[in-house]
Image 1: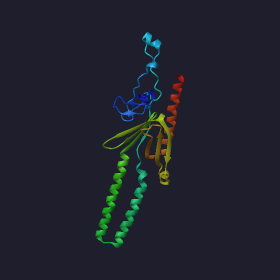
Image 2: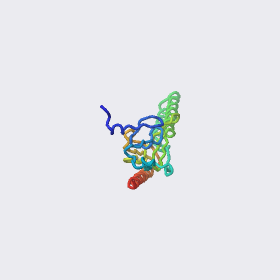
Image 3: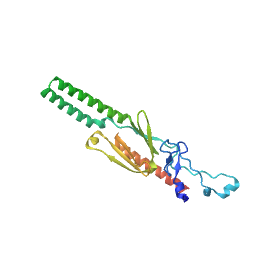
Image 4: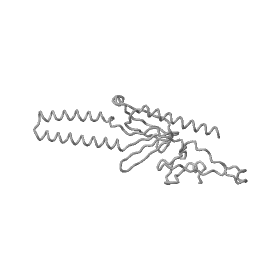
Length: 225
């Protein structure tokens, strides 16, 4: 059975990397290349075809490289891991007191090795999170870079942002850190989390303001058409 026109239009592939992307996307979420859309024959003006004049291309209301400006960049904050280090310090003190009171030299040495090993493991875990994630917000897109040796980049167009949720514990509020969950209408990447960032309230407001700005520009361009 032949495919309908809607199903054919629903398939969109990146001309640079060849991967399938969302039909409404203006950029490839895998390589960042701007998508190229072929003009439909029925959209052409027959009078212009007779005169040989080419119809003017439709304006790009989603992305203008000359107007895209950086807004914010950051990564997970070191101080957001302070609660884990406080727990590690308290447990270390208790173990050292217990070893000095009830054990001999061998037990104390084992406790010191455990404390040192757990401290190194905790530091490595935190360093991988801090240096393995980087966030970049522009006036039109949000980028999330993950990995140290192998880098993976996800990007979300602000025009597709549906909602922003901010979550903070009591300690996060004291340290001015927290998480942001950005929900979008993109089926391939519905949620992006900005983990343990500094000043999440201002970052959330910047995302909302620039999202409204992109949508307002798109509405004005459509009205002009």
